[in-house]
Structures are given as C-alpha cells and as structure tokens.
Length: 114
Length: 110
Image (cartoon, rainbow over all chains, first blue to last red; front, top):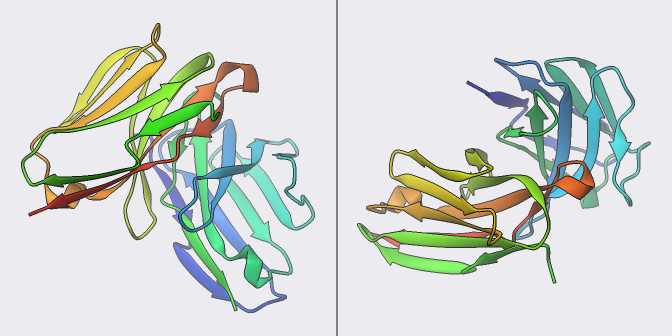
C-alpha cells in the first residue's frame, strides 16, 4: 500500500517552454502533497505544500508564479514549471500524505532544460 | 548546526557485512523517515517510525525518542544495497515538515 507515482520520470524541454509534472497517490487519498527539489549531490529541499482544494503554501525563495501547483483532487497534484530556464534543471520529487503527518514519496522526475 | 545529522557521510562495506547508519536530531519530531536513493535518483521510502523498531527483509530501523537518535541497519549487505540513505525528521514545531539529513552514501563491494 501507500504507492505514489510521478509522471513523467524524466523530461527534456527547451528554454522558455513550460512543463507539467504529475504526482498521484494510487491507493490512498492524499489530503496533503509536498513538492521537493534536489540539485546534484544535495539534499531534498521543500518547495511547497499543497492541500486539496486550497492554494499551495510556498517556501521562502520559491517563486509561486514560476512553479504553479494544483491539487485539484485527493489523488492528484501537478507542478508546472513555467518559462523554464536551464537553472531549473533538477530532480523534482513529490510526496503525499493521507493525514498530514506521514509522507509517502514518489520516484521523482528529472527535468533537463536545454 | 543542522537539526538532523547523519553519520557516516560515506561507507564502504564488503558483501555480507553488517552496516549501520546513524541519524541524530535536536528538536521534537512526530516521525522519522528513512529513504533510499539509487544512483538514477529514484527515492524509495524504507521506513517511517515514531517509536521502537521496524524490520523489512534485511533492513532494520530503530528509534530512541529520549536520546533523539535513530539507526538504520542493513544485515548481510549486498552490492544492490549500494545507494544513498537519507533520514528525514518530521518536525513538530514546523507543522511536520521534513528536515533532511545530509545522506549516507553506501557502497557494498562484491
């Protein structure tokens, strides 16, 4: 149980375009979903927390207009990187929580912006 | 000083050896996670625990709430256990947001 999927697992896009990453909880309803970013050889950094039906709460330094998060249902959250730049290239990981306490991690999405 | 500290940073073992990774934290937590990240980047949730001990296959995780310390043990290690192991503490004062340790890079040689 407690499986979280992400799609796509990797994506390459051109600078200036937008890319959407999906995070799904497959066998439970996630009241809260978290989005993390990981740069090479660094630890995960929380970008934002989203609750179903509410606006996401972004961490300090994360541009909410650049990283659009939608948590429209209890099993799906999406992260859209708008007007992507090479410095946005990173590994994006989501986690989902049925209660807000425990978190179950997705496998991650590797984004490369050329 | 980080709120969550892991040791060692790197560990090399021979196949079959017993491996221990340590995680210490300095604040009140609601749970502690152990994650595994393979070279390709994918993250696997290994354990989430708030007390005592959990076992899954050759992996054992323990936590001592009073001492603010958790350990991840790998018994009979195998080359496929080579990965980065990360502990992450759900910080009560931060609404259970996770604070991550720096990771332990494990290499198991055949």
